[in-house]
Image 1 (spheres, one colour):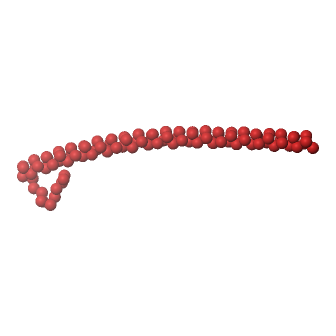
Image 2 (tube, helix red, strand yellow):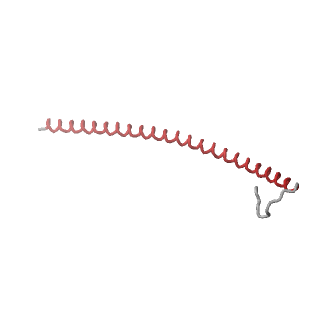
Image 3 (spheres, one colour):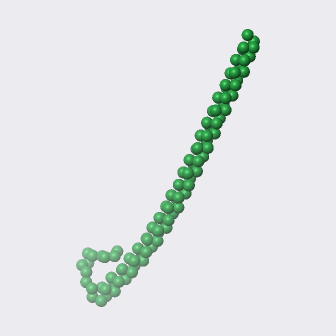
Length: 95
């Protein structure tokens, strides 16, 4: 009776150890998967941030070019008016 109880306890401990190892292995696999997924998201986020920075730089350049173009257009309009070009007072082409 004692031997059979002893064997049952050994078997139970062995099963608990096996379950513990399997649980640990699953947890480690899930952790590794989560790390890989996080890395992929981080790489994609960095690409996105670089794209946003490039777009912002392009927008700033375009805005500066537009300001310069408006100044030039206003200058040409002023010169044209000085030389007799007439337009309705309600029309402001480049302002």
